[in-house]
Length: 250
Ligand code: NDP
Ligand code: 8X3
Image (cartoon, rainbow, N blue to C red):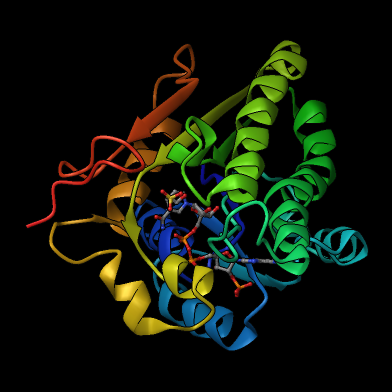
């Protein structure tokens, strides 16, 4: 039977690559993001492969989240797989120089947004006594690096919530996993550096960064294990990267 996946942050990077791979694997898709033109384009592109619907909302706005999910057409209401991927870093500053709006954005989107979406979808998974939640963390969930402070805190929270979901949802047969990538070449650094594309590019020069498709591949691997197998979390780096700060750049 065709499964249904709900992917946040599907307009770019890891979420978009995951949508493309899931479509090729005949998974019905609910694609989410704020940029509706991108959602429309992706829907048009993937509709030849699978059934696709889109939801335009900001994960950090709780009313938007619940209204969007409540508005799903019947055919898409039964969600088997939730990919909590939407998120970004905003800024890269020391704790003393950090911008309060950046801090709010990271905590509101990366932590509260993930919670709002999960809270809206989990009851239906509990009713089904089945489901799969994949939380996209980061190596910033495992390690704190200079100037990473609040982004790292937000991703440490994702790591904690991944563990919490595993515990609380265990009795409902809901599998929960986290993927923690190192550097992935996406729009992530453009967002972190507020549209400074030149600065963003330097993050990915001198070595081969992970590509969004590499992470999509891992997400697909995780969700296609036999029913009795559940990967708790998985940390993945580009081969040139040993930790958040150690990079073998040429
Ligand atoms: P991108 O910037 O390419 O994609 C981010 C996605 O999140 C976009 O689709 C964006 O959609 C969505 N998003 C951001 N803010 C909101 C919001 N307020 N409401 C709804 N959607 C939102 O980055 P990545 O693909 O790299 O990032 C995906 C995830 O992977 C993030 O959680 C990130 O922290 C994590 N990650 C990334 C790494 C990297 O090096 N790239 C490494 C480790 C983890 P839209 O703007 O249309 O709303
Ligand atoms: C993205 C990877 O190292 O920029 O989460 O935090 S890093």
